[in-house]
Amino acid sequence: MSAKKISGLFLYAVLALAALFFLAPLYVMLVTSLKDAEQIRNGNLLSLPSTVQFNAWRLAWSAACTGVDCRGLQPYFWNSVCMALPAVLISTTWGAVNGYVLSLWKFRGSELLFGFLLFGVFMPFQVVLLPMSQVLGYLGLSSSITGLVLVHCLAGMAGTTLFFRNYYTAIPKELVNAARLDGAGFWRIFWRIVLPLSTPILMVTLIWQFTNIWNDFLFGVAFSGADSKPITVGLNNMANTSSSVKSYNVDMAAAVIAGLPTMLVYVLAGQYFVKGLTAGAVKG
Image (cartoon, rainbow, N blue to C red; front, side, top):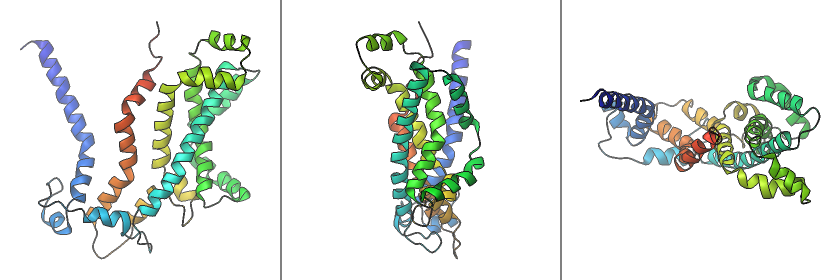
């Protein structure tokens, strides 16, 4: 066997081991969620269920207790949907317009403004908890889904602006100048020329924002109320709710339910995410 084939087999073996390592927690969650309590006690962590049981999924969705509330993850799931969808769309649109202005409609001080915006990318979110709570209280949005949407839009603005600004700098300025000569204005150029060229970076930003917002726990636990807690907070409360017998199968089913939307997004649109990240990486 040639050295080239041996090195290729070694590379595939390393990749397979890495894949098994990263997929092992998901496997454990899935098989545990399909067992009943007796199978969990008598089996081991990696054993397959002798009989497949879906009762844990039903309990996790609609009957498990989070504190004194025994409605499962269902209300928290829909809270996250109502929070994530508008927050993703608004923050992505906001970032697209900001990136368009800072790259193709530069003005005096635009680079300085962009530099200040970059602070938001690297600033730890714990720093803004107190001032943000004061702002939400002043606006009357404390402990509400609307308040969470506003928080995530503000927190994501720096990142989305960075994505779009860096992408739009690669658009030939001759296209914009030609449209200006033809009488096109700010918004007409954006909708007719810039936005149709933005599909790769739009997919990257939408997936990135949806993942960050759906999986967020810090803002959810800090700014939500009893009726506006997102699914990450509900999952934490369910896992920490004490009972006479710990229902590991229910907790695992709840964890899979909480992570299912982001997993589906990456499975269905992961290729667009990779294409968007690499768009413009090679020129010529």
